[in-house]
Image: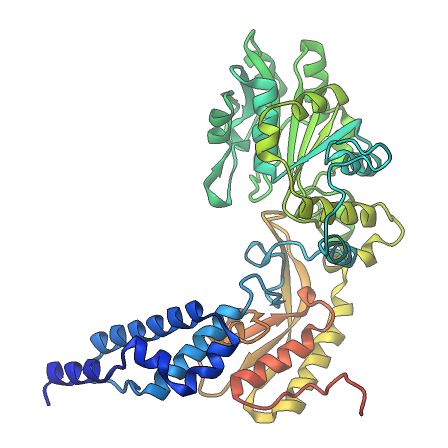
Length: 481
């Protein structure tokens, strides 16, 4: 039979959509799922078969009715699976943008569960029954945490930068050092944001050096802001110089020009004791007298996505009254998460233990090694020679566009399955019921234990069992009957 005849014969044998839907063996799926969803998966399964037959007419294609129904069942299972599911982060990147950046404080999950069972008190004063600003409670916590006079929150730090520039410098010039005109993920460029805000960029200095005299010389009648931007995701090293916030504040006060410090990452404690000496703190900028400080809520602060604006009361209140605020304001989910996050951060004595991001960053390598060796032992015991595992000394990253030149010592478990390429193993691990995300290195999949949370080891064992087609290797936690 020629290839074209084989292709035509396979296509002819494909069942029609109506025939599949009338098949008695499909009835259990129709009982569990809406008919429209089942029909959509039937059409998708048949189209997939047609496409594969067209691409490989001589291949082995199961065009039988049972084969189509199996494909429909698999498609419905994928459809029912949450898209935004919990995963095991074994990449060693604490603030992994693809994995939602910050793991949240447990209190946030509990508060969300309680509040979302019904209505929540978002913008009502319960004492008076009248409407109130949804950020007021967060403002109080942020002022206590950072020492700022006032604060507000928008939906991310790009939005924070936009509304600050629009409020203070629309139609005016913003003086910014050339080496601080950052671009971050998603093609966010500081010059473009300035243009969209209505402000006009006036760049000064050179790529590697800027001096106070450069700011002084650039100031004119149209100057609206002196802007300092922390280069969160890159560093210029070597023959460099920059102007401190304190120096800019002194100049700004003398000239009557507000100073805005866009810190990006949002450190509220000194990370140098953990080997990270590149992150200025919010409190330092506030104490230096910056009129406005902008930071991300979902990086080193460890909250959900948000942009935090802090500073002098008169300036922040003007920002809150900007009509853009309604377009950029946060929703109830963000408010709930941030409230609980800030409360944990205020517990200075216990926050390294209670706050996941701070705990993951501050954990010393010598505390990670026993966990890596324990996981290695469980893998060897459960799978023997089916999985080759090794414990390795490695390096972790903070991630999230922060501390680009610094890494943290850690311990990892490398995985190999005989006869399987590392890339294929990594892909299969990601496709398990609880996805396990590692990194491929030297023909192995590395799982960095720094970014493991409680219980992740069990999910790794289950994922490996799924890859190998083995039974559940994790004993049930349920008590015996």
